Image (cartoon, rainbow, N blue to C red; front, side):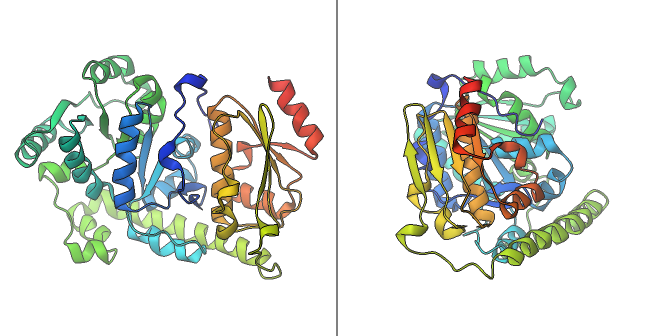
Length: 393
């Protein structure tokens, strides 16, 4: 169900040191895409493993955006992810339309070999879950040739069954018994994202990442597009030529759903933005008031990418409840929405509440367009917000 973050005890929640200093994610049609580079991602994975807290990473492309429009549980899984990578050049291009360009493509098929190199260097144990047995076997041979000192904790291809019919307990036991540090899941979208969201906290594996067809690339059963096609965003053409029956229809659906959706998001921002001057002084920055158990975040008049990136907007990890005072906010863009969603995620993960106070129609319209309004409780005043928090304790 959308917005159904799993609550954890305080002791089991990571303080996410790796996230300090990261820009807010870009919200594209209700899916958060993080502003990270390949180099940053490898560093973050390393910090995640060292933290020993469970984390989920997703590698999103156009298909994710298209599927998430009608699949609430997939959108919930992506909102629940610690990191969502931009796996596809079209996402990079389209981010320019929303006024907060993503820095670079971070493809799962590029990241997995780098993570394997990191794991070999640091002695991290990796586990591969999913894919056909013969493909896993070939991938294992190639991986051992290239990274001979890598500690492969296990490789397992469970029976192909629907998500609700899988033996989750037995699969978790295999992974736990293998003392896994990094888990690569290859069930395909949206099954792999949903499986990870259902299991990663109980597994306790520091890094769980959905990798799609990367196992096939490692096995050599599927060839990647030439570098020039990857860089120019034409990899999908190459993949379609490889599997026309399976992929042609999917890519056409993605284009028909995502392009109009992003254009509507762009039009929504443009319709409210022109008459608002951009605030770049101290008065335009967010104010945060912290109490014993809650914090009040007062948003500026214009919550754009500049304001959303302000460090004063970062909420504390040790306080459960967050009150977002949006009474003065007249405009919010994709980055501003991303920052608010991260606040909601943090509060709910701590077992607290995130209450949105006095939001104007422009803010509510942006949240509704991306099906995110349910992530917040709503109040008309700070007093009512405190009453909501008190009633939930």
